[in-house]
Length: 216
Image (tube, rainbow, N blue to C red; front, side, top):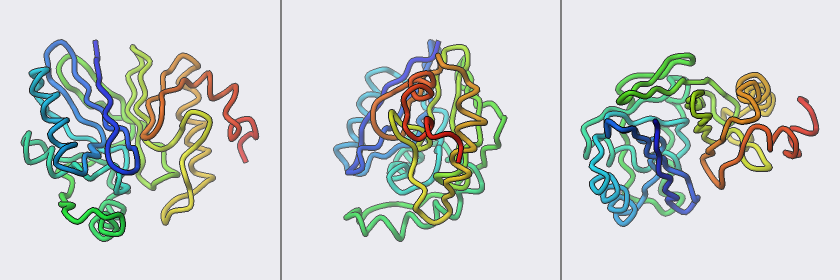
């Protein structure tokens, strides 16, 4: 069974996730730890739980989701994986980080690329990769259907959706991703977004104002 811990890091209140199972093999999704204190918090938790980090995954490469990539990769000897379409976004993070007061951002490039429909394995567990572009061109979500878990990045939030006013964004593509990839996961699917509290597909289907407007 997958267990996980959420950490809220950096000035953007970004959600970082550590997932593991009974084998203690673990993956980290979107490490946003921007300061030494945040990196120490993440490391202490991993040490306390005696986890073996075997994967580093990005849902997408906006700067607030990648600030801890180099730390995780270097500390746990794992390569970064994200979708190839988000590589240009990743390459802009080094330029953008100082604009937000982050002077020590270290760029690392992917070791390999994620593909929609593939499975990511750790221990006895797996995550399905869903391609959900719109907020970013290569945005993905990580889903475990057995436990109704979806780590969705910045696609769908409680009562809202991801921004589409950045370069490479598309409102039409985002809504298409929600309607064709996320909503079919079923009302019981729990959504753990890149910011803010968890929700469910059912809750958002019934009450999210962007979804109540219909696909436009």
